[in-house]
Image (tube, rainbow, N blue to C red):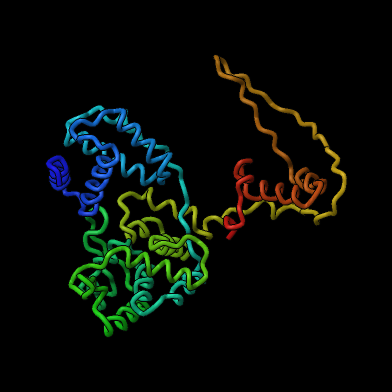
Length: 357
């Protein structure tokens, strides 16, 4: 390790950063040095910009991964090289809101049934039954299972926070059955079992193998079971504050994403399509375009602003007329999808079969 990388490690240790963060930041800065071939104490703004483009255009990394790389390089330049102006050279890319993948209860059962052995089965049950992160499962110990109080204790989870999770009887029985066969998730050293945590790669392999054996075509990761645990709890009636404590979120806003995934909340609002008398599909025919005359109300606002025009809104009867006059099944399906789901034009154009659950 070079002197500057050692200084980077020291600065991270001074701030009590997690071991995974220290390891990741050092790897990122070392990868930057190897790519540019320049000395780290002579980094130029041009090199930073070119490396930024390299990550996005050539390596095509996910936005979240690029943000992590930028955080590491910013930290190195600011606290090791004492350069305060690096923020302009390394802006954060725009992050898009993507909803996580969630499994149905039937898919969870198939996933657990597809486990390779008792070792993998217990991992899957613990991930789903307690909503643990990969790192939290790796460091789980026997003393963290309190069968008298029926809670599972997570020590020093993400952000250095402890929490307790209700322990279900099904999970407790599975852990006891597994414990009779082997100690709780032991690691290995040179091929031999050792008193050390397992690596996250073992958990990844167990989940991906079980998904393949179960015939689940969604992108299933260990974190998918955590998302599924939270969504199923919300659908069962748990409130957001309780869910935040069980998941160990620092901010309630991180928990509200599951409102977009809960079927109970999504289906609480009535769909206007169900209130219409939708005509049955008709055969191909000539399409007669009907123009509906409609008055538009305009409000003049003083000042340089443009006048605000109210959007045109169709009545239920007019929607039925439009659907009855569609030229073919394709047009009819597009109109139904746009109206029933409230989609934008570009969202309709990019719909795929896998988006329909």
